[in-house]
Image (cartoon, rainbow, N blue to C red):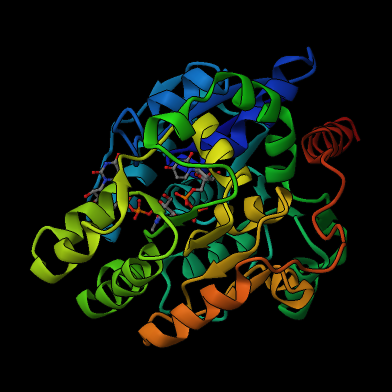
Length: 363
Ligand code: UD1
Ligand code: UDP
């Protein structure tokens, strides 16, 4: 079975690591990995290929940054060319970025069946670019690989047929398990940043809704700066956030109270997450990784797709409209624990996806 996989953004390199490895181990699968180049800095892209032993991409389209239409359009046209040349049996895409949508659209127009990994997530907020990307990708897909029962229910509610939905668990759990030992061995991040196990907060911010509004970004940074007066806060800063902060003197002042570092590789991130007292984030992946490592989380958003973690008490929403509510959520979450549960499957997602695709191909 010939599969073209489209990746392009940091979380997609991470998710692809385990499934591309499963494909590579199987003679029945030929995978062509296409990197759109949506993320291109070494610490947003190259480092993940290296650390996670991802195969070198068949091609790097080098599309880079741009407005939504231009970026997605250029990817669409370039991916179509590859599909016409390679004529695969399936297209595989991950998550909800512009690279996901471009891969799905290119395949849909050529009647190539699409496998969507991380299908069915919904924030029910159509102002998020990711929500549009997810809905369109799900409704174009042939195999909907859902991480949770909630995701499955979302798809059924939208009228997608049950026989296309495969509840396989969350591939991020496979990834976390696959690399934890390597990360513990290789990472020196705690010493480098001067952090003590269990005595710091790890923060990440990159969501468009938070970075495109100076006001929201300042509220978040003020709340983190206030937290940093009692416990160190480390912020590996996404380039989008770094760019948004260039124009704000007030934000600069808050940043000086935090340990701001460049984006880190996956091994350093895993170690930062595992040893934190608390994670404060607007990232989808980081919310779940906090849970995998038993660390409480505050999500700096109005809503989350990962509602299970809120219900279990591992995660709290703190809308970035009010500094006080973020500080209260952080204070309440520090030292707390949620209920024991396993809403994301058993860490065998990559193998389940591979088996499902091969079984359908053979049928
Ligand atoms: C994208 C995804 C988002 C995902 C995130 C993961 C979309 C619409 N958004 O957001 O869903 O959660 O990736 O991190 O696809 N930049 C650099 N160097 C890089 C990459 C980006 O400097 O290597 C800067 C550029 O200024 C760019 C900005 O970051 O304009 C935003 O990058 P972009 O890929 O458009 O979106 P993300 O915010 O990264
Ligand atoms: N991550 C990383 N280094 C960082 C920040 C995040 O390796 O400096 C990893 C993180 O562990 C998770 C993934 O990147 O696996 C999440 O990506 P991101 O937050 O960019 O996107 P999202 O998950 O919100 O789409």
